[in-house]
Amino acid sequence: MKFTSAAHHEKATSRIGLWLGIAFLTCFVTGLISHTIQHPPSWFFWPSRPVDLYRITQGVHVVSGVAAIPLLLAKLWSVYPKLFQRPLVRSLPHALERGSILVLSGAAFFELVTGIFNVAQNYLWSFYFPDAHYAVAWVAVGSILVHIAVKLPVIRRALRRDPLPDPARRAFLRTTLLASGAAVVATAGVTVPFLRDVSALAWRSATGLPVNRTAAAAGVTFDPAWTLDVAGRMFTLEQLAAMPQTTADLPIACVEGWSQSAGWTGVPIADLLAAAGVQPGTAVKVHSMERDGLYRTSVLPGEHTSDPLTLLALRCNGEVLSMDHGYPCRIMAPSRPGVLQTKWVNRLEVL
Ligand SMILES: Nc1nc2c(c(=O)[nH]1)N[C@H]1C(S)=C(S)[C@@H](COP(=O)(O)O)O[C@H]1N2
Ligand SMILES: [Mo]
Image 1: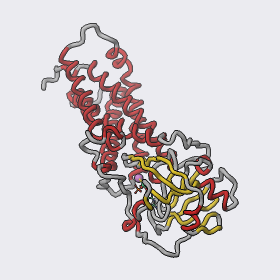
Image 2: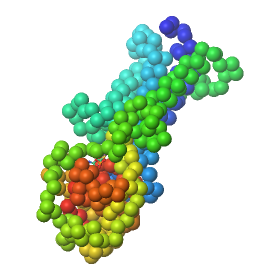
Image 3: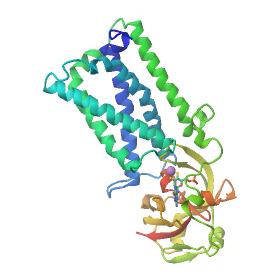
Image 4: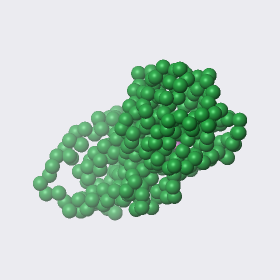
């Protein structure tokens, strides 16, 4: 392709840059939400309703990240001749501009590639994904801001409407949007129910409710002597099953991208805490039978323990829980990341 072609026009570049900026900002904000729910500072508040709230923010995170990949490729394609222009550095602003593009492209690639591999549950690296993905997100956003600041005059000129857009340029923009849309449709089925059948890459949720970490992988086995410790009071499985049960459609929304709803039945945590003499709305730490493993415990904030749909679930879709889904009981709370829906629970500790 010649460097003078439609793709390399500054208007095309700026238009794609604008879309890419919107996709990245959306991805960044929803990513921050996800990170903060999992590492909540004291001021943080996350509502337990609507039930699908976290499922939606995390779905938007994954979908906007996927949409950004073709946009990033098109953007790089549309500017690449410039990347080889000599001299490499002309002035301080020029050096800043070049440096920011280098950091920006590197960080953006890192985020999108690690994100996709995380969705595929394919960990080809040795670093801890959430920390690295979170840290590099700030680098990406910082360099985007520098890039926009440096390019503002060009962007302003370029984004002004022109009366007669050139057809080749429009075709390039259209192709870029189509590629982005196709990437979304191919993957969004992992989280958007009505796209499940058309998404080629939605293999995680193809058959029934996916399992993340099987009982075997977690080293958890059935223990006939199991009891549940609620703030020092013990409950047997028979006692739990004899308490009034609530059934609700609640999603598991995994940070790895998939989400799926099921009918969960169990004892509301609020009732359990009341039965153990604990004040309603108290935060509790949930412990599981898992010995090690990053997700063997989680914290249920007061907002969640007082919600009548926050369940200690004993059944899924009418059946007793399978070992892999957390037998004898697990947390199923509305608007909560999958990693915090702790399985194989044996203790609720008041915080
Ligand atoms: N004890 C324990 N609970 C856990 C996990 C775990 O590793 N250990 N994984 C979590 C993750 S990441 C998800 S997405 C959900 C998946 O639940 P499922 O396997 O029943 O679909 O369980 C959560 N509960
Ligand atoms: Mo998960």
